[in-house]
Length: 316
Image (cartoon, rainbow, N blue to C red; front, top):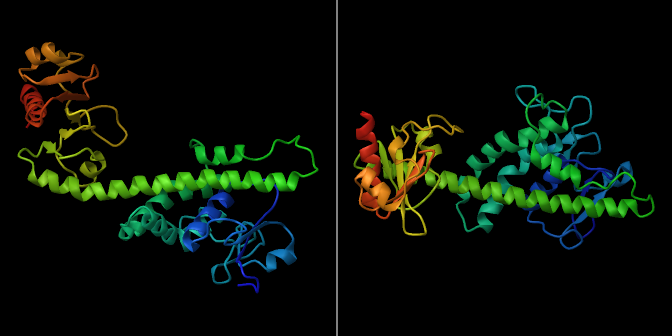
């Protein structure tokens, strides 16, 4: 630490990218920092003498040394991932502080800090790695990461006057940081919920009368758990806030819009009395025209819709 009362965090001045904005958010969360000028100082500079005084330095300084809290990736010999993918400052900071940042966000959300390692690993795979790839120009033909584009849009237009530009760039950087922080908070919350649901889905499946019909007491992310545990689920049944019970068809593979077993064709697009007559389920409410989801007014009705579909198709 420097002799000043507040820790000094440094990244480069001028135009910015997603990686240094993301790295700053991770450091803030992991270190318990909140407001520049309040509990820490943020300096955006390329001045070597100033950089040498920093307590935490990233994306500038041509040094990678975690023990010295230096996280640049522009120098020769900069670290790479095991498969050779180069790190950006986001990836370098994440390797050291990502799990602590996730734990802090979980703690602020009410607990479940034990999920931090799994969530941090998933975020590294699905988000941080993409930031690394894009920042280093090795993204290949894959679609660009929307977050990187949104952060890029926070930069000042080229024709902003030179007078006062540095202060305006610093303010724009903080706008980008606020955007990234919200994205990270939401991603952590989503992954926490998904991991928490995994055990509940497995337990509910074990308790379901028919292994092909997953009966849940509340709505939750369930399809990922079915794939992860290789369960023979064809339909999930669960309540929704309006009082109905959904009967939701399982896709054949992640990301697919098809179904392992669609609801019957002659139920498609029907509602209420017409659907009750066609299905033989008195409290059936609707079946989507594309046959991937339907509903009944009771749990028993939704389960019966699933059972009748399985019987109609002769699925074993």
